[in-house]
Every structure is written in C-alpha cells, then in structure tokens.
Length: 154
Image 1 (cartoon, helix red, strand yellow):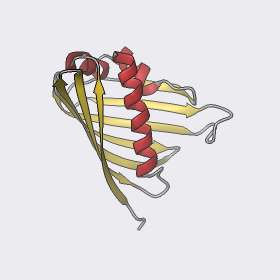
Image 2 (cartoon, rainbow, N blue to C red):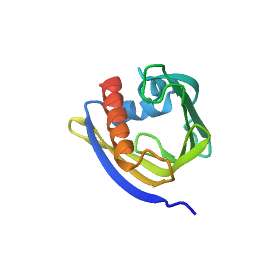
Image 3 (tube, one colour):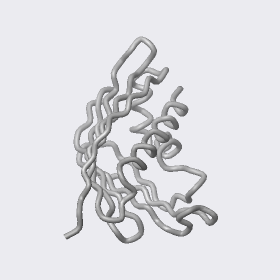
Image 4 (cartoon, rainbow, N blue to C red):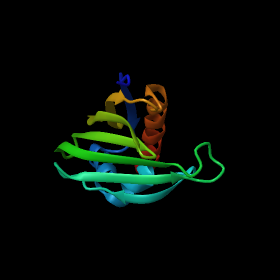
C-alpha cells in the first residue's frame, strides 16, 4: 500500500471587485477558462465548466515542448457540491498526471464583502497520492490561479 500525504492550506485575496463579479469569474465558462485553464506552459485539450450543484467540471491539458514535463497530460475532474451565489462554492477535485491519479481534494471558495470589494478565502483540504506534486507545489499553483483571477476581475 502506498502512503498518502494529507495537507490543507488557506489562501486569502482581497480583490477590488464586488462578490458578484468574483462569483461570475467562477460561474461564466469563458471567464473561468481565461484565469483557470489557459497558460503559457500548456495547451488546453478539454475544458467544460458548469457551476451547478452535482455538475462535473473538466480540465485536461498537455505540457508544451520545452517545458519540464513536455508532452505529459494533467486532468482535473471536479464535482460541484454546494453553491450559494455571490457567497460560496464548494467542490471535490481529482487530479491525474498521465494515467495516474495524484490527488483528491475538497476545495471551498468563500466570497466575503469588504470595503475594498471582496475577500476571497480559499480552503484546500487534500490527499496526495504516490507520485503527486505535493502540497507546497499545489499551494503555489493556487496562489498563481488566485492572482490570475484577481487580475481578470479587477
């Protein structure tokens, strides 16, 4: 039996936009694709976003030539568990690298109205399997994604 590493982290971002606009960046597939899926290091092969409770969201991409993992595929499959518009989104996420599952997680995004706009609080609770990138790399990935989200809605 292989070991599982459990880890959690909480990230906070103050975004100069109202909660409704930040929520829209999660709910609108075109906007979400820009901050969540697109990137210089990879080519998106599949992106399906549906922010309804019980819906499945998918992202599959392949690393470009010249990158550390050239040709390798990452696949995210998410199940939306709970949505309160403009306030909260909770989803379960599974990530695979190539043909191997590398992690499963419960992720909560809370959108809190503050004077400057929105405080986004993202809580990640994950289980990392053998061969996974690990919690530090995943946290860095989410830091980058939240920066991109903030830049998209600001």
